[in-house]
Amino acid sequence: DAKTTQPNSMESNEEEPVHLPCNHSTISGTDYIHWYRQLPSQGPEYVIHGLTSNVNNRMASLAIAEDRKSSTLILHRATLRDAAVYYCILREEAGGFKTIFGAGTRLFVKA
Amino acid sequence: EPEVTQTPSHQVTQMGQEVILRCVPISNHLYFYWYRQILGQKVEFLVSFYNNEISEKSEIFDDQFSVERPDGSNFTLKIRSTKLEDSAMYFCASSARQGSYGYTFGSGTRLTVV
Image 1 (tube, rainbow over the protein chains, first blue to last red):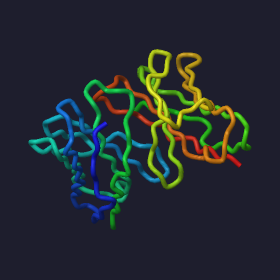
Image 2 (image 1 turned 180 degrees about the horizontal axis):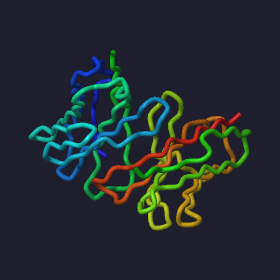
Image 3 (image 1 turned 120 degrees about the vertical axis):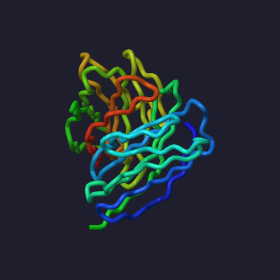
């Protein structure tokens, strides 16, 4: 899987939007961009994924740069419950059979 | 919402003993995975399983590890002779398809080897 780069940590205020960046300059044309998060003492949780177009779901939005070399996970209104480690992962369209987790971004949310 | 269920939530075992960690994936999912996370470290891929056989495995998944889907609903991870360094959270995951589809993870089994 191609490599992603994320900041080690970020801080946000409650009820404000959060933009979590991810760089993936070596992304190939068939790589999907996946985001997962891991709340404290829980297993990873799928958040969202996309290929080229921006995506929205009930949890978050994913903004993908036109050249696909970077993406941003957007939490529209951070809550204390959103404090977690957020992982940006690339997966080939053909799938392979594994998702490889990096170190991710630890998001702190202040009340 | 469908869940991946893992049992037990916590297991303590003596070094050298065999352990079996159990998982019930989501019923219509076809791809199954085991991951582990040593305290304070990254989530590490162990093995993927499809069509009743291992699809891919990592370097961690050596001869001490095995997986099985014994009855069409359970998916198990066996560690034959546990070592202290096997102490970790073990997460089971499943997905409906490979590729662009997301995984659903269980809450994990905390394995403590003493």
